[in-house]
View 1 (cartoon, rainbow, N blue to C red):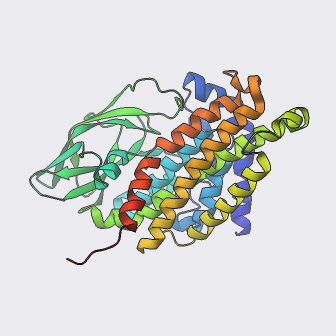
View 2 (tube, rainbow, N blue to C red; view 1 turned 180 degrees about the vertical axis):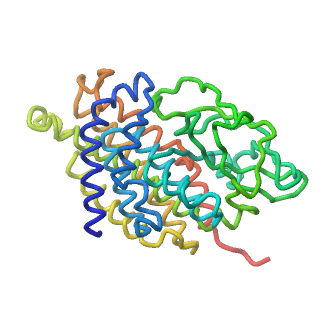
Length: 366
């Protein structure tokens, strides 16, 4: 890792330990959206590590997300949302989405999210696409509702995918400006955790997509190219939540180690497993745009492992801390809910296993 990336990670740790740690309870329990913290992370360089401006260092980007998720899984998730939105814009090749707009995005001066939960599940055969596009002069008009899109606000934007009416397997991908009058943000039901993630339902009514905001048309070749990069960046969330949970185990080891020694998933064993997983992730992160089938299976596997170790570490941290870990104000209690989110956010653990099974199935002759 370069000296510049080491300096970036040091700056990210300072933001996480200072401004973020000071508001983490408000993010989780009150639903405070940490806009200023996200902008500080942008100033620290966290949002450009994986981009051309940062040397396309996906390992550094994943580590930055992990450092933040170690303190607050919700903010780590929002970093991922913002990172992949930047990925969409840069890989689009569309000059209208690059230049000043992308520069502001990479420095956290503007903030964006991703509305690809529904499309990713659609491409895996899990659910239908919720946005529909019909051709019009100069582009398309898009209608439909996405039930939840994260890291949003009225001055934000996000990537979305719509199916073109009357054309089988023809989808397009575009940027939605949340300030547009025909893009309505709607309140979501309250979640068990992650309330401060700027998550909204979005209703599009004849939303115009043209050359100015087009990411890809058609979209399937584009998704095939960025899919592994999209997924591997998420590993930072699971690694960070798991590391935070292990930290919580060590906090009580001197006082409770004499009885905690009888528990499974002890911190030293979990740390060794997490370090090995992190090494696998860093190796795969060196070639994020590889499209080989075995490479994609390996990426899906480390993403699934990140979910699994986050779940196990968070539960074990609760058992290690005992009653104090059951307090609503406990960081351990928060991490239990964060680990659940890591396992259900798209691609969810069941989605990952479904795709690994599909890709691993023997190819039979026609």
